[in-house]
Each structure stands twice: as C-alpha cells, then as structure tokens.
Image (tube, rainbow, N blue to C red; front, side):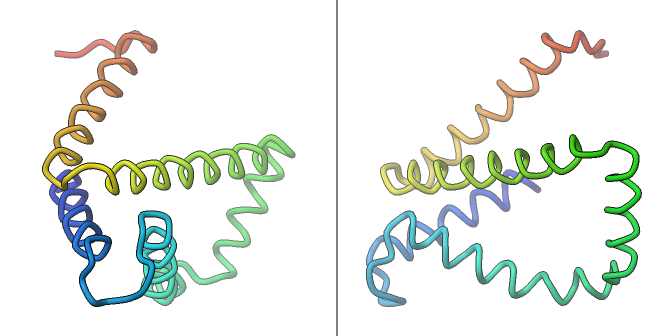
Length: 125
C-alpha cells in the first residue's frame, strides 16, 4: 500500500509539474511545498481529534523528562532529514517520469531493508 500511495502521489505531482493548468511556476520545489501545506491543513484537524493537545503535551513532557535535550535534538534531526529526503525525492521526480521514479523508490526501500538487516544483524526467516 505504501508503494501504491507513493506511486499515486508521484503521478499526480508529475501531472501538476508537467504543465497542467493548476497553477503557475509549479516546479518540483513549489509542488512539494504546496502538497506539504495542503497535507498539513487536511491532517491537522484529524490529528487534534485523535490526540488532543493536552495528551500531546503530556507525551512530549514525559519523553523530554526521560531523555532531556537528546529528545529534542533527535526530533529536530528526524524532521530535518525527512524533509530533505522528500525534497530530494520531488527534485528527482522533476527529472524522471513517474514509472522510473516508482521503480527507483521501490528499489531504495529494498536496499534500506537489506542494509538494516546487515548492519543491525537482524535474523530473518
């Protein structure tokens, strides 16, 4: 399902970048920015319904108390690298057709799983 969703997003994004009369100057970086803002606007109400702000605050306070400043550094680093990963994926999509992008993305996932198994010595059956 993840690969299907990723491929669907790539096809839609490529259509927008390819000159569909949806907006002006919709290159890879602008398309990523618009989709990020739209996703945030659509998911924020759902997030607030599922996890009220008080529960989020209690969870963050507990994690921060247990880990201290390392928790904040890990959260910031995780967010930064995930943003950069998605930005680079959209820049690659701007240069590739959606099918090639989907194939490369699927192969990337296989390489990541194989590397994680090798590095962390995870036994598999």
